Picture 1 (cartoon, one colour):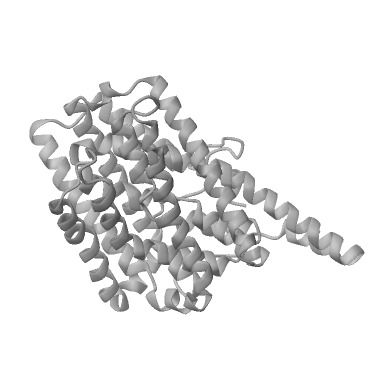
Picture 2 (cartoon, rainbow, N blue to C red; picture 1 turned 180 degrees about the vertical axis):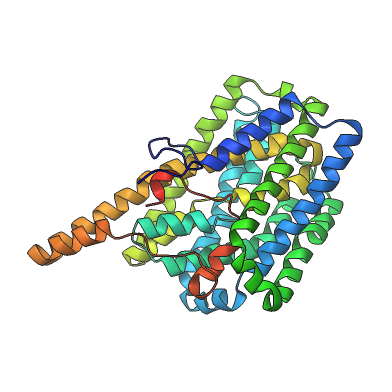
Length: 376
């Protein structure tokens, strides 16, 4: 069977959409928007972000998300990892300034620790690892909903006064440009939800294009302001090392912590993937609102962490799946061999769709994809 032209080879461990983001950054470096074109780019970016969060709200089934509240211990665990443990680790990394990380990159690292978890990629990895997919859907949805309020509030507490450029005006801008469009989408979902479902592929392109426009505007402003001269290649390598440690700590904490709390294996898998990941789709628009011309450096740690988490979690999900199949074989003998083989060969459970449990998954932007190896 021939591979589609727009799909990367399975051996290439890079998210295709991340390549588009890198290309957009390169374009902003070579041809940054200046003068009147910068004003047009900024206006278009503002409109794109508003549209993006309106679509998020219109595609998220609140009723289905609320149904998952019966699994409240799991969701509280994921929220605690996302909005408590991550920020604590981010604050602890302040000791790395200025010898390891410059203040601008540290601000971006701290902002990375404040954004919500992913939806789509957490679901995909949980499905591949044979975990609790329904719990991953609800956990990601709750994290996105809570993040619309909690992320700006946390930014007020930890970024204001620390060089992050955050202010009350930025908080008001978050409410007007992100929260209100999201609420409007929720209110209109009853009438436009069917249309969005029928045209989700086209709207996926709108999602991706909106984020690319936000990235181009932010990095263009950074080029014009000259902020990129503040960072050397050595500091970027240090940032990668710090983020690798951060991801390792969170994966260990979510996996070990879920085991200590007595969750069954399927729930532990969902907690591990939903509690250790951060959403590029939600973080990029928020950074554009919060940091303005400084958004380029502020989102760089998030972009690097996004690719790192995809690559590491793809390997981890396959290992979980293999361990699950081996457990079935050991538990059921000869009959288990056939069941394990069937489990390995079966495609991941469907999680995306217009109705049913997949409706909640559509809240995640199309840009939150997984590496080719994790697509099953």
